[in-house]
Image: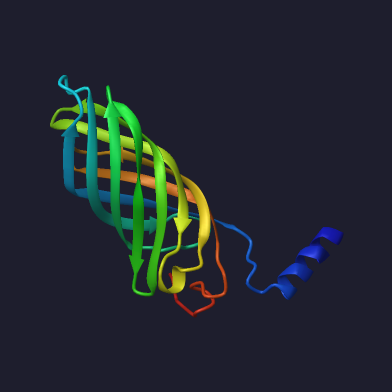
Length: 174
């Protein structure tokens, strides 16, 4: 009970302090550009730069950026079908953008129409714009290729927000 009173006191004294909450989304995307740069004669090592666009569907306990447009930009280094990947993901809504740096591991398998690249790893929020400029947090993501140019995935994690968050600015995120 004393812990609850201490928490109540902290929230009352520090109104910008907000506990992390469970956020998540399911997304689908399509590569808009891919550049493959071979790094050896045998084709076993390559660097792939890519951009993609898609849509986020909120799936966490707290609705966040539902139906937002998503833009990815990243680099993957594949050696014998797997390797590190990293990039920036941006979720855009009318009241601002939420952004995160992601890094993880990609794997490539050959499909009937060519290579299918999937990935998994972690993300960490970076300053966004508008209603999302004070969000901070981190979590995990997965991405599975559904074709040579399209993929689906899921992200989840925790976010904290300061005074200028969507809720504090009166933004109606539904």
